[in-house]
Image 1 (tube, rainbow, N blue to C red):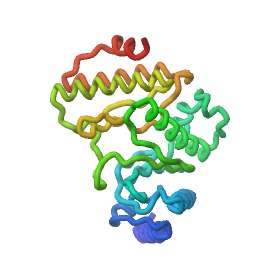
Image 2 (spheres, one colour):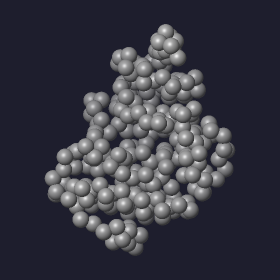
Image 3 (cartoon, rainbow, N blue to C red):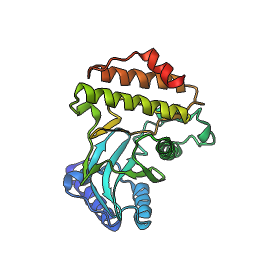
Image 4 (tube, helix red, strand yellow):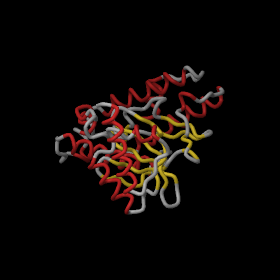
Length: 257
C-alpha cells in the first residue's frame, strides 16, 4: 500500500471513528487502527457506543499478532477494549484451545466463527476467574470480536507487566505465593489459565493481576493438565530469577491435591 493510499485509509477510519463518537489522540493512534477496524468491527463498536459502553477511545495499551487493546472511557469509568483481528488471527491455534472444551462444542469452524467464539470464551473465562476470587480485569461485555473489560491502571496509564517491575526478595515471594494461590483457585473452579507467564501477569502495587485468558480451558479439555504443568513451569522459572525457591512437583501437588 502506497503512502497516499495509507493516508486516505487512515482519513476514512478517522471519519468512521467520528461517527462512533470516539476520539483518538494523534496520528500514531490512527495508524495503529490500520488492519484492526474493518467494517464489521466498526459496526460492533458503533453498537457498543450506542449502548453507552464507550464514549471516547484513547491510546493503545498493547498490540499483538491477534489483538490490540485500547484504553477507552465509558460513562463513569476507564475501560479496556480488546479487538481481535479476524483476518490476522491464527484460527488454527485458537481451535486447539477451543476444540475439547465442552462449553463450545457446537462452534462452527470458519475463521470468523472461531474468532467470535474465542472472544466470548475470554469473557466467560474472566467471569469465572473473577467469581473464584482471582484478580483479573473485571469483564463487562463482548460482541463479535470485541471485548470490553476493566482498565487496570489510572488516568490512561496501564499497570506494568510483572516482568519489568523491580522486586525485592520479599515482594517476589509475596507475588509468587499469590500467583500460586490464583492458579489453585482457578483449578478448584475447573479452569486452567493455559498461557501463564510474566507477560500475562500485571503487578499493581502489591496486587497480582492475571490477564489474557482467551486460551484458558476447563479441566475437561484433553490438554488441561499439560497446560497446567506449563503454567507452573513458567511461573517457577520466572520467580526463580527473582530469588524464589520452589519445586515444580510440590507446587503441582499443592494445586491438585
